[in-house]
Length: 345
Image (cartoon, rainbow, N blue to C red):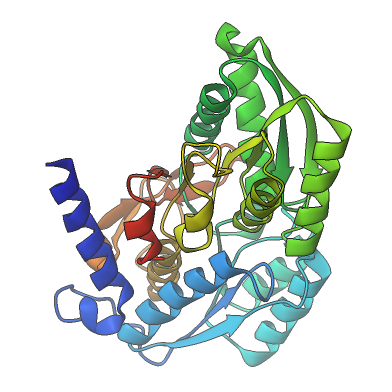
């Protein structure tokens, strides 16, 4: 029965990933005609971001709008500021941004707002003063608990573990890491786990590879690495598996990139991991932007809006004094389902 249910979910996910025609006729879509919607991701060459972009563009175009996709050359705040200023000059109607730095974009985004541009963030938030709302993958506490429980399980409840993050300024990464620490401190069951280091690979494959190797060299008794970043987990998985390391891995990864590393045996570096659908995250960011531009929502807590085939979403208060829209809970990928999901995204 579980297998049949999974197959049904997979079929639905594959249909949703096929493009506009998969849902345009079935869902009641908002009107974005004559409007221009920009999406700004963290950097060029990031596979997770590329899937977010595809979902965003799909929805905007299905609703009759124009999508502008911007990929900064580097995962830095300065690179994103340049992109924002360019979009202001173009007179776009909205900007949806995955922030490389929570606070450093405020001046540029306030300038965009002053020009009448509707600003929201997704994936990685900007501060509450810089946005109308934030499209979040999942609740921060929920992600922290999920990842901490995975570390506990894979480590056997004791030993040294490390975190391989993206950039030190990434709001989403920092929030999840703090939630993991808070989970560990709040429950005595984690008392025998020792977090030895939080390393940063800057969402670059080579730097993440180098940081993984450095962790192995510095901590010979290391048992688990948790990488809550798709670039980092992919890099770490290859290092650990190529070296036949006894260190195991978990975190947040793309099934298509992690397929060869997932398995609960000595031959595989990652017993299991989690993620949400980045295509759906991009879609929800698009529906949010359209609702803001059309005046259906202002970004205030308690408001709700229709997101086409995705259903109805409510805006809720976030822990930074702003608001957010939560896509859903993280999903577990392991040896029993990785092959099927790798065909989806």
